[in-house]
Length: 407
Image (cartoon, rainbow, N blue to C red):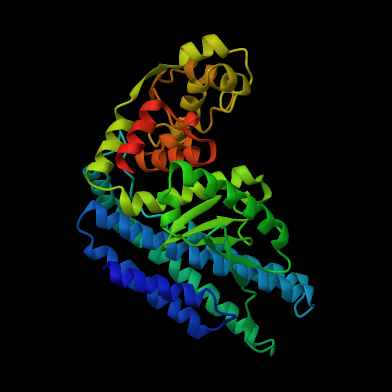
């Protein structure tokens, strides 16, 4: 199964680099997508389910990039060039955007990552229970997406303008501070390549210096870094997938140290995937999950109720940094995020408690970071990022001790 999925993802990458869109290419997308969907039938355990979900996530990213960032952008350029009218652009943009987005957002596979609340058996049971309805939904949305793309290609052919040209990015390769770097950009990129590369050089210098001292494994792996300036995602700064670190345009607007933190975090995902297994993984998970205790939100309100912000409160961050991280963790912990993503102020917290909300929550007594409370893997990548960019002083001594044991 994994061999098939890997090959399909390679094909998807080739398709998504194509500079024209025609019915043959759409048919290839459809065929490979259906083959990847069929792979779900032979998933027999949690580990395989996670691998298959990752494959689907990667396919989704390639498809989303190609359709939303390249095809729809190229459609807009037809209007700029006066090949089509503004009304034609609006009609066909809507005709494509709605079914394509419906497919993209519904491609999230119903699989949970394990943490202190969710075991592998629980996660796999949910996967098995929800997979049939998920498959039916995705197949329904995919048929609408393929139909919309076919209709668009037919319409464009009627213009007698030749094949529909897709404005895919140019790529350049560099070696910076020993890291292989691939830059993806276009002349109209929001973040200019020259500015981005200057910041990247400083950021990689920070990563190299910190990793050389405290985490040399990050340097030994020689992971390629793909800087994608066309992706300005607000909720994702970077990703590790298919053996590469992807760094997006959003972080490239920040300062070099913040960029270095994102890079180190994603490099650490490679370390976790390839080197932290067996006893090391169990030891780390026990360290993270064994540090949980109870926080009474009534005490938080009593002490800081006059403050405006509940999350990301500057006063709490300065006076009570552990509590600050614990509160930030509530919007990342799968057990609480649906409740606390809407409780942003102390007034919101007061209303929640007065309305009968549960006052006691489970929090890490020695948190690595807010985001690190999502699961053990993210706790590891956050720890490695902090260690690389800020040094051992940024971690609890026990966390530092366990890191040394498993690296």
